[in-house]
Amino acid sequence: MTNGFATTILKWFAANGRELPWRDTRDPYAIWLSEIILQQTRIQQGQAYWERFMRRWPTVGDLARATEDEVLREWQGLGYYSRARNLHKAARQIAEAGQFPQTLEGIRQLKGVGDYTAAAIGSFAFGLPAAVVDGNVYRVLARYFGIGTPINTTEGKKTFTALAQELLPQNEAAAYNQGMMDFGALQCTPQSPKCATCPLAETCSALREGRTGELPVKLRKLTVKTRHLRYFYLRCNGETAIRRRPAGDIWQGLWEPFLTEDEGLPDWVDDNCRLTLIAESVKHVLTHRILMADCYLAEVSSKPQLPDDYIWVGESNLQQYAIPRLVEILFEKVGQACPGPAKESEKD
Image 1: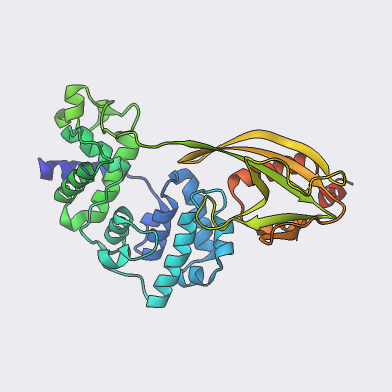
Image 2: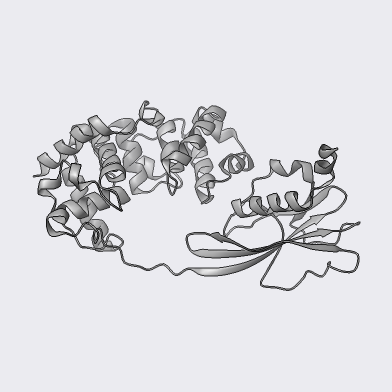
């Protein structure tokens, strides 16, 4: 059964596999970059970012020489910004070592690389016999073999990892791993799997038992919290105040306008400040929390005293700073409702 399963996946992949630019190379840098970008990101969106990164920083050395701000700015819109920071740190690890690591252990030492990513890079770039185990692989294996062990438990991870490694054809690791990922993404999909045309249908446990909708099993553990953010776009003579978000919270290293959280108005809002509500209760969903944001335009004739972590920048230079998607949305609303002097002059 084991050999038959792998053979079927390989045949299916040869006929149906997706054509992706990072599959046309054995360059570990290009492959690693694609894997980091595609964590928590759909291929359709991630491919454009991969192409842009490869154009701007065609080698790992080029990326290592970039600043963190430059990398975060190029990453803007992808979310999960710790991936970008880890990417940059890992590039510097590789540059310092003088070459890309070529063993699973060495690849795992890179910042932001776990077991799945190490197996993907190792098998795709160097042909290492390491099985990838991602959501697609969990789903295909759980359904085909009828495994009800929850995939997000210690026991489940051990079970599926061992099975994936057992099924792996040692000399065709790259094609098989890519085949499993594509098979789960295109054939054995989360909703409405294409069972009628599936080459594994005759021996699939889930199809035989009517359990395709139940497998894989995942325990619900996530507690989602709601945070209320109140942003103030301070405008003073063509400048605005922003700060870099600190470590230990969402959006570390990205920039944002003046913020209060679950508080009243700042002390500097007085009779000399013209305050306009631009947007209210703008909802933004992250993995572990829901953000509800209000945004005010605060127009002042002289700069108020702000905490030391805020800086004043020209409104026309804001595009040089990496910002979270939510802040980008709020800035767009400010620009539409109350354009600054630069925008107003463009209309004339």
